[in-house]
Length: 364
Image (cartoon, rainbow, N blue to C red):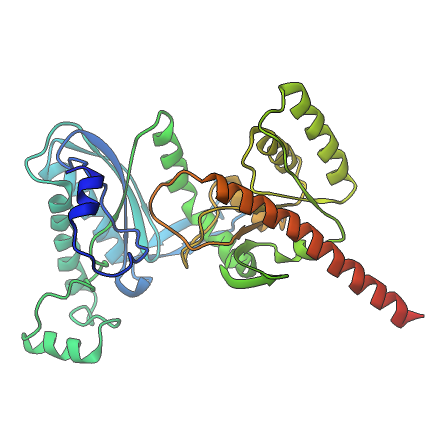
């Protein structure tokens, strides 16, 4: 069934709730494909291990960031590698254990008899068996209401689709669709312990702040919010019609402004805007980036953006709610984001100037 038919025929059941557990429509989960799988423990309990080391330590030193697994964590890893034993058509390519979740990469090399979801259900059942054996309180699930727990204990409860045992129901999957994606996945998995240490070392920079109000605008934010208090905020907006030579002129112009202390602000949509913001990012200048998609509660910046947030170089603002669907940004959204960038520069610079004047007058 195609997406349009699916959307037209399904019964309305209220607004769609953001979730990381949706499957891809029209995808055959028995065919050859590579997946990155993520599963999270029920209630985000840190049952699988602990992160040790320092985020700034080199990978080949004793203080390198890593996960020290619990006995349960080691059992989960064994169950993961047993997938390839039970299903020769599947290759286990990677595994990264974290305190309350794990990431793993599976390669379905040829068509399997049952969908991947059934394979992963069997994996979960093996993990639950180890959970019951190793954790005395395993039969009860803390996040399930007490009535439901009581029913479970008396054997009267029906299947609870909202809760699992060791892991939350369902899972998150990402499909390998582009050249080079596997390399990025492997790098992401290896670097996961270090990124978690960075979040713990800089909690204020990586906590999603809701309802950050600037003028008459409201945003969700991740990063260095103090960049909004800098004396000079400068909007980066470039026409799509600029030539390569004209784009380079804009890059040179904004780099000089950033070197003098300006914080560059942009949704980075057009080729010129992307070139300017990329050059500023690479040179370590502070940036405020506006993005169309919002944040989940546990969102964190990806790749080099996380490093930039930890350095206090970056603030990411999102005016709208998070959505799971991949959508193309509309022209109206582009215009709105650029107008927000302009307003931010105007409001914040005026506020900073007013505060500076008031401070000077009080000191006279």
